[in-house]
Image (cartoon, rainbow, N blue to C red; front, side):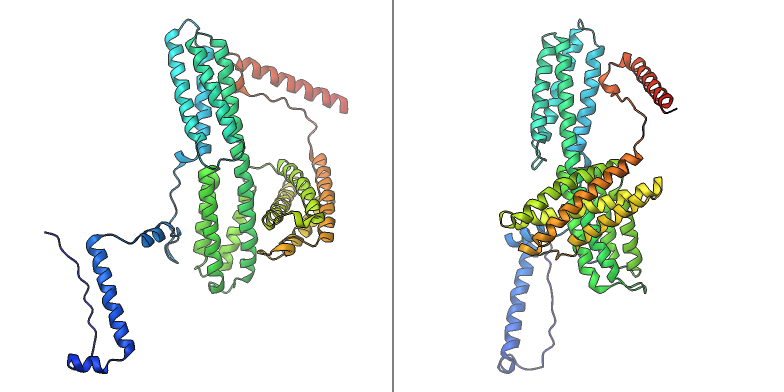
Length: 446
């Protein structure tokens, strides 16, 4: 027997007869009673049927991950569904298969058949990854080339042509690595942009926060909005980028969401800012980061120069993207210079270059965040001057890199590209070669 649920409302009314009550009730009261009756009918229908209207279901699907002001609900991001993680696993499997092919005698036909089946299994996984929507440009092409090479590997193994099979398998491995690098590079670029945008907004909100131990009400909305934005970025990283970036962004998003309601809000925001700066340098060598940022800035300076000369040819979206990219790379440059000074000591050149990068960045940061048309970028004359200053800045960065460059030549090789039985001897050879070169340089300096 099914139990039905009922909602009972008690409405206090004067002790009048039904006719008198209706006569004396105002129009507003009658309207309110009518609406309540209709609401109760709808409520009873939902309870009994368990169904909702299409519009209600749609709104449930589009509901933000933050269900209310206090509760933080993190979206699911299974690691096995991340294409970068999938490719890393496929690269390991392909490398293991290649090693097995090199060690297996050509006469072992059973093993050859087994390896052909394994190659087909890897190829099917790669095919599934290649179908992931919105992968970075060039990824799908590399994955399709990897699949072609894998099919060739299987054919060569079945026909007993083991050396040609190894060549094809090596090509498939190289294509997989290229696809993974494409995803990783694009994920890093998007991560730098996400962290840069979050840092700028948090610095502004931190300056507005009170240090008196009371949360700033005016910051609550912007903080939760920023947390929502970072969750969107995290989901995008999970779907087409780096899983570790996705998890880092989600963790920062939760901290920002929680900071909206803590008493020591300014301290909480300052702590998040400190973590953001560290995260922007996570796993990065400051010298490599300086080289990459200065190279990117040079390209952006040329783009800024063209846009300043031909503003009518560039859409507002492209101008906004250019502004954000310039800010991101300039801020990254400053962080890398500060880390370099911590590790190597300050110099007049590094201090002057960092100050110049901050000044140029402020010229873009001071513009309206949601500007349109001419307000997105500085006026043409100023933009041309800034583009020139960015070029000079990049030259100074190169001077800093030259001052900190080591004189020792190091020979590098990838052990995975050498058959396992020769790896130890090959490693010893390169080690002796590197030592000999180092000794020769020391003798030359003397």
